[in-house]
Image 1 (spheres, rainbow, N blue to C red):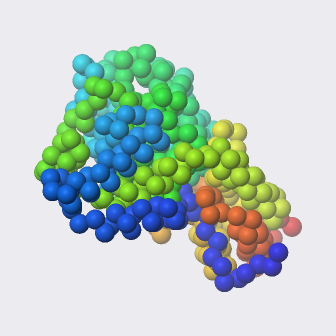
Image 2 (image 1 turned 90 degrees about the vertical axis):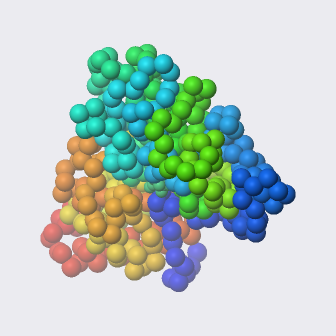
Image 3 (image 1 turned 45 degrees about the vertical axis):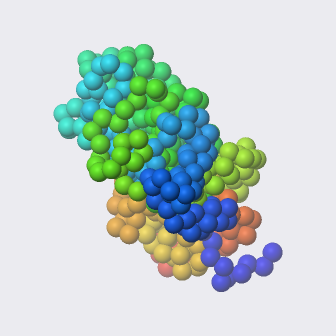
Length: 393
Ligand code: PLP
């Protein structure tokens, strides 16, 4: 098939997925709604109905009751809200926080625990949390809150959340799961994860930017110290008029995530494996990160020895292919990845980390355009640097 050079190839779904058509339609239609969901007149009641129907859809995705979903602006806000020492869950207070070393920065920097009450749970070389360490940590004095992501945004490595949650629960603790990268790629059902509360983000699954959710399975869950104070919206948990349009789009994306998820995961996995084949064909010495662990079907994170990620990313961008280097949230200032460092990847290799992530609009054409652009970029680097890339010669 002829490659159309003017077509952009978007391989950065883990940073933001393109808006799904039904999410766009739902958001645009909700944007026409005049009323404030807190108003009692007909216009307000219509806006309220949109929010409550959306709550039921997001609740189905998370496997919780609708009243257990709180809409917020983003997963970052969800993490900042939930991870506070006054979190109410059960009779005993939460005294300490255990955070996975590969968590997103919104968890690592967004929690409200004192440094002395925070422990970082190490990762193994395959990117999964060290469960032996966690078991020992769970037995230490003080009721613990564990923050563990469902899957990593950089490597796609899926964490053993259910096993980790069982250890923490056996010691009377509580589990927060950042399920942002699970939604739309695999299940984010709270029962299957064994977590107590989940964070979700609309824009990672084909919804609009500006909506996220906290979803709890526990009847005794309360947010503790509120982050955003003011009116009594979201049952007093999160003040501020609801973002009705973004919430409506979020729900449409959630409905899509639940329908046909397994077929979509299989499709993405087949594309991802072919992307990996294209990388290895042009750069046989490329290292794939997290390969030994279960990974999301849509994510491929790799590095080519002695090729800087920033250089490769710019070359691919100029060729019409959008990829990410390390964490998208910190790209622009290319810092080395804390996730790869926690996995013990050598800094020289980690500096070359490129992430490809696929989603609902990804197709064969993307694969072909990536393969051509990547081969061209690596070929040019090889030519210009001669013996600097010996293993490619
Ligand atoms: N958690 C993970 C794993 C992510 O990948 C991201 C975004 O990159 C977030 C949390 C933050 O999500 P949001 O953009 O909704 O704040």
